[in-house]
Image (cartoon, rainbow, N blue to C red; front, side, top):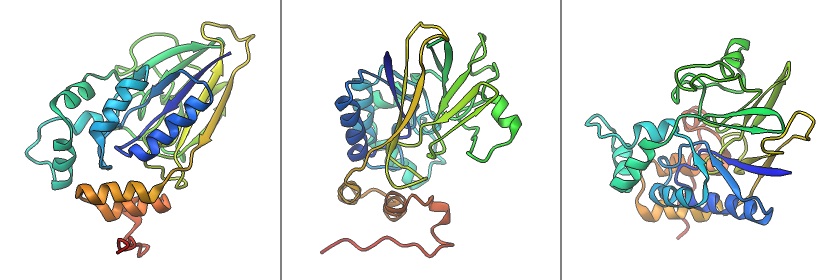
Length: 256
């Protein structure tokens, strides 16, 4: 049996990323696919790019990987900070990433994308319509021609889940650096036979990996990263920052 680990949405959180990669190593898995959003939001985007280039066999481009490296005079102060934290080589590499990747595992054609088959900027949430589900398996300009996949694996929404409808499986691997379903990073393991047939076993597992959240928040604080409070609340609670104000959520002050 062959095993492929799939990570996504690291967002510059190296404490979590290294914990996830260490768990992958402990399991003896040698092939890692990254579904993008390597940098941005967290403090160490450049380090996350370096680790991804070192460890991942394939990385597909995410929405942050697509817009963050591009010069833009309209960038807000936080985006400028994350842009400047990357090196010119980091930015060029992120923009060079492919938008889709396919493999054959136990007779299943598996599609890897960041957000959807339409665009890295088109979001498909856990609560989606039948039409949105069908569109993930369609051939589009982004995916190119070829047989329809039976499994689509994606990230983007930071919310791990698995859904199978009429023989088609949609898997979101969650986030390895900024989870928004529970405050523990996740990744997925696909298990089967590369180049095999439908007679071969096939499995999917979602894995949660605890890490030192407070240590990562201190890294961001020491770096002077903007949006620190929103980042800290997200890491501690898995509540998306757009909901912090309405819920009266504030970050704890730093320990003296």
